[in-house]
Every structure is written in structure tokens, then in C-alpha cells.
Length: 414
Image 1 (cartoon, rainbow, N blue to C red):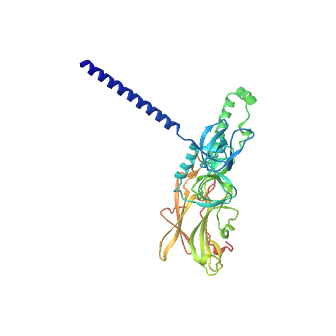
Image 2: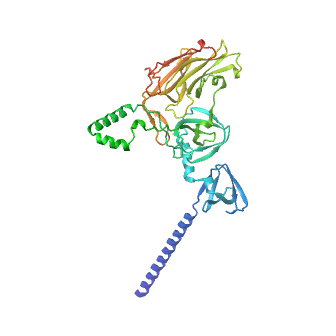
Image 3: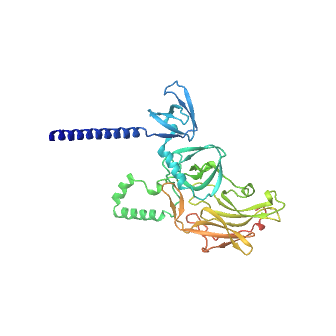
């Protein structure tokens, strides 16, 4: 009886062990199957491409894909990928015509990071142009924006043309000091050395050229890039020369050779003789800069255009320049004796020192100051806690000047 019981227990243990082994085996197979079902996706970066049934000199087209389209990867070749579209079209595509999921996620992350950034201006594209993940002509690109498309401009950066193949390498900035004292010190040291050892002077003169005879390396040319957002919410960097800032023609004619980087409505006045909707004529505050790239500031001039009810034209009510200003220009209102009055503000640099982001080339003042103005009728006055003098020079070694305001009634056509 005891022997039969022991035998039964042994059979039960063996059966349990067998079932446990089957469960572990099934679990391993299931995990392997789940691992194999992990999908890989790529996204079309080319304008449009055809899918081919095979990689060969002669092949058949089996489908067409366009920029931004998502594709599932089925097989990897040497320079081609076998992919499937959402319409179950299967074919081969060149690997250079797509970006991987990591690059796609980088663009999505950029959009999330800057979704709440203020819009400093709107612009129109001169031609078809790609969005880049960072400033630079050879950085990763993805979304292709159409000619005449509208974009929101968020911030500006400058990178060197020669270094644009590096990911967002910022360009050289104008020096804030001179190197003359250093050269004088070096020359003085060389003179002392030659006086102490004439033999060394003659021997070194045969092998070394004087420092003053060495040509200085030319400055690296810079180009501006803008972080923009399109109407679909796609965010990326575009070459500044491909964007035209939206500026009303009525005030654009008064740019005087400068570049208007932003025009913002301050108020509206009613003029029955004006050919505008509801006879409401907008008045603007504008930010202008020299037509150059790579400047360590966003604008160097603020100008307010008001509407003359007597002459029925725009005139300059206020102007201050040259300053070292930074976007955005913010417009709001504040209570006044007659209701409300428009207010605008912007930042300037409180010192010559400027911080350059090493990853993007974005310039920011190390000691920012916020300057506020209010407008009542056509008079613009300074307000706010910061009423200290505004330094009006942005060039190294320049002498500070006092800010100037100008009433347009004294200047015809302005």
C-alpha cells in the first residue's frame, strides 16, 4: 500500500514538471513571436518617389509615395528598403529618400518644445523649401513646404556658411574688443628677447616671419535661419533668405533700405475717406534691421507709423535707433483717462555682452532690459519701471548716442 502511494506521488510530480515545462516553452515562443511582430517605420523625405517591384536596372512601378508619408519596413537591402504603404502597396525605395523614426521623433519633439512660443512675424515662402531639424544647409531635413506657403516665424539664428555641414555650428560674431594690446605685449617681449640674445634673433629671423606680415584670416560669412511653424503645426528651421516677411505695402515703402522684421498693429483710427474695410485704418509699430546676416541682435530700430486724418497718409510718430533689440515685440493695452491706450515693449541688451547658443546659434543678451512705451493719439512716451537711458550703439568701439524721437508731421511723406 505504501509503495503504491509513493509511486502515485512520483507520477504526479512528473506530470506537474512536464506541464510547467510546456508553460515555459509556450511563454518563450509567445515572447519571440511578439518580438518578431515589432514593426519598423520610415517616413518619406523626398518630394515624391515611385516604389519598384525589384531592385534592378529594369523594374516595374508598383506605387507612388509623397513627402511625409509613413511606410512600414519589410526588408533591408544594401541601399534600398522594401516597404509597404497604408494601401498595402509593397515595393522597393531608395534609403536616401526616407528618414527613420528617430529623426521623425526629433521633429515632433521640436514642435512640442516650441508650441507656445510667441509669433514674432508671419512670412511667405519664395519657393519650395525643406524644414531642417537645426540651422545649417546639411542638417537633417524632412517636411517640404510649398512655394507661397505661409509660416509663423518664431526665432532667428545665425550659422557660418562654411560650417553649415555641421549640425547648427554657430558662426563667428563681431569681436567686442581689440587685440592691439596683446600684439603690443608680444612685440615688447620679442624686443626684450632680441636685445638679450642677438644670435638667437638672427637665427629665428630665418625661420619665422614677423607677426605683422601674416595675413589675417577673413571673417567667416554668416547666414540667418528662422525657426518657423506652418499651418499644420510642423516646426523646423528655414533659410532666412527664402522667407519674405509679411509687411503692409503702405508702410513697407518707408523702409528706407532697411529690412522690416516685424509690423504689429497698435491701434485703429476711423477715416471716412480711407479705402479700407469699415474705414478703420491700422497704426503700426515696426522693428527694422540692416539688410545683413549674422548680426548679434534682431533689430536696431523701432518706428511707429500713425495715420494722419488731415493728409490721409502714414507718418512717423516715433523712432529710436540704433539700438540692440531682441524679438519679440509685445503689444497690449493699459487703462487711460479716455478708456485704454496701446502699449508696446521689447528687450534690449544692457551690456555689450551677448550669449550665443552653441547648438543653434541663437543670440541672447546676457543682461536684458525690457523697455515699455505707450501711445496716446500720436504721442509716444516712455513708461514702466525701467526709465534709464537706452544705449544706442551696437558696434564695437562705437560711442553711445541718445535716443531720438521724430514727429512725422514735420516730415512729409513719412
